[in-house]
Image 1 (cartoon, rainbow, N blue to C red):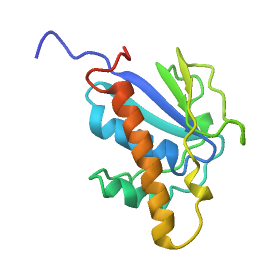
Image 2 (image 1 turned 135 degrees about the vertical axis):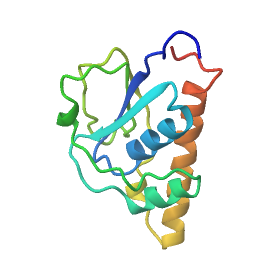
Image 3 (image 1 turned 90 degrees about the vertical axis):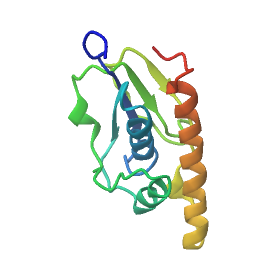
Length: 147
């Protein structure tokens, strides 16, 4: 095992309501790369964990049903290695987190904007889930350059 465990990098995903995008990102990073990264998520304001997000993550074998929606203030003063904002910054104000060594701004579609039948809404959530998963694989995967 080598000489002692490497300290995990802390990653905080932020969005407006901490209902879907940041929750899916937290769950995926923890499930796939939890040996190297500690994942957290929060929102400008807490709301409710999206049942659609729980369902589409379960389809990938990742259980986020135990997550709860968290307000950003829970993390005030905690140093993070990376903060990733996942909201459409043009349309909404994304929260700012000053205790991070590095911040990335990404723009994933807000799944709450999907309308139509249950199946159409789930299809939208799956699209966003897959975009987030691919980005995490590229950014944090074995061949990725994130320290």
